[in-house]
Amino acid sequence: MAETVVPDQTDYWKAQKIMNFGKYLQTHELAQPLTWHVLDQAAAEVPSRKLAAKDVRGCLSTVGHLLANAGKIESRKDYRARRKLSLRIANAPSDLKPLLQAFAEWNLRRKTTCWQVIAQVETISALFRWCMDIGITSLESINQHCIEQYFLTTYWELQCPCGAAFPITLQPGMPASSCTCGNQSQMVKVAKVASGTIRGARGRLAVFFDWAVLRGVISDNPVQIQVANPKQQIQHYPAEILKPLFDFIRSPESDPAQALVLSVTRSDARKRT
Ligand SMILES: [Zn+2]
Image (cartoon, rainbow, N blue to C red; front, side, top):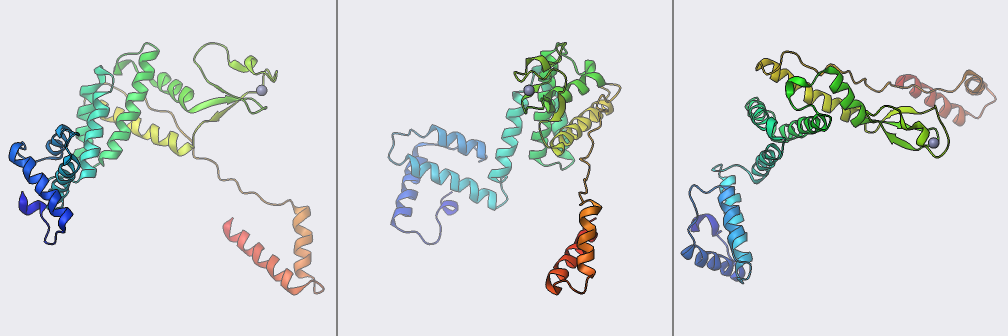
């Protein structure tokens, strides 16, 4: 332990810090094997009224980082990700927990990063909570219609021409009449988030339900909704504006520098289109 904590060159304050840690270790035994969990727990139990508490916590953290650098335990970042994943699963609806746990382990074995698995667990939990709110409490009961309704109410909203936005609900009757501007019938459906966000959620749910089908939990994947890529819009000037510009480029009477700039701009626009 001392070899791990004491660097080659130490000044007085560092030495003092290490001596405080040494005194702490004389009366506190750390559980073995040393892990981030053990070190965090020990740090949390150091009485904060002790003057050396900061030194002891700092040294416990240093021990962890040195062990991680030596490859003996995982990195702090990996540990935090794994702990966050465990918390997300623990906070999921109780019926879903065993499945989420198995799904997460399967994904981690496939070398999916822990952060990606956390996003998957969060997306699946959000869907399941939404389903529970409308009375659907089992995975088998989630069908295509349910998924479509989930995406509609979660990722889209109704927008009035005046700019006011309204949530889409499953209640009969749209909130068009509730807009104070008096517009009754011109509400349009618009996405609340970027299409990439919606496609990401769709992809994560599709993977989960595919996995559930493979495991025999359900017979069909209900995620059949398609989320279109945003259309690439090419904007251009109308011909009545472009023609005089081209005439200007061709004309021997035009200013050569200005004609050149216009010519280059036109070539660049052609490349982009
Ligand atoms: Zn309005």
